[in-house]
Amino acid sequence: MIHIKNNEQMAMMLKAGRITGEAILKAREHIKEGVSTKEIDNIIHDYIIRCGATPTFLGYGGFPGSACISLNDEIIHGIPKKDRILQEGDIVKIDTGACYRGFNGDSANTFGVGKISAEAQALIDVTKESFFRGIEFAKSGNRIGDIGFAICDYASSRGYGVVRQYVGHGVGAELHEDPEVPNFGTPHRGQRLYTNMTLAIEPMINIGTYDVKVLRDNWTVVTADGSLSAHYEHSVAITDGEPILLTKVE
Ligand code: MG
Ligand code: MG
Image 1 (cartoon, rainbow, N blue to C red):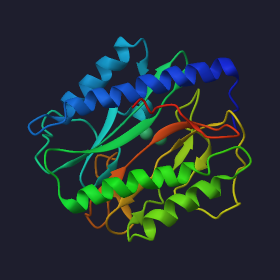
Image 2 (cartoon, rainbow, N blue to C red):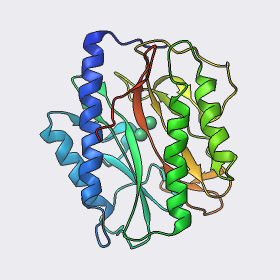
Image 3 (cartoon, helix red, strand yellow):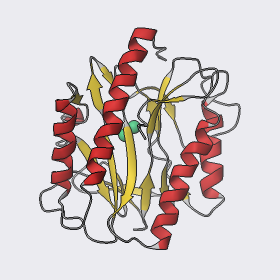
Image 4 (cartoon, protein in one colour):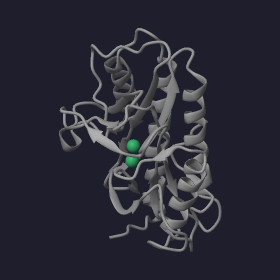
């Protein structure tokens, strides 16, 4: 079922989105060699609580953190840990959400720890740019396939693997709502977009193939070939013009 938000609900989405985006910025300030992924998670947790919201991810499906923190070949759903220490040259994906008065934000970004390789930086840049190529089509009257096609076309034509097994989604009163928003698709196909639909659009891009596997912790998703992966996500409100990036705060 597709949820179209009314104006009051959209105001909550904006607030939840802003807190989510700010939590990621706050975390970014603390990314450096020697910091544990649990410390980053604590910063996000405390920031969200201080804003009068609740961390959406904490306890979601039993997830033990307020953010998914995934390093290098880990794509998504990395569990924050005290003994997982950031090292110079790592790339770290931070994915989190805040719930404000019953509505959720969902956003992710990828950051380098200290100096990173040129190929890691190129991956991060292509992943972010693929998101912006995708949202050019995120407007009322278009279809989900238009967004996915634009993302995939941009990244795959540059030789990157576009993850298929995990996809974006509607976001609102639930973290994951209909419709699914794959990072691949066929133009003019799929769910039609309407004003005040809210979607989490989130390309996950690998240097190697798009194949993934799940580690034995039953959460962490990694690239099947061990190559680096990047993730970039915003919660987006559809309008009949430019989309509103609910979680983008800078
Ligand atoms: Mg997310
Ligand atoms: Mg998401």
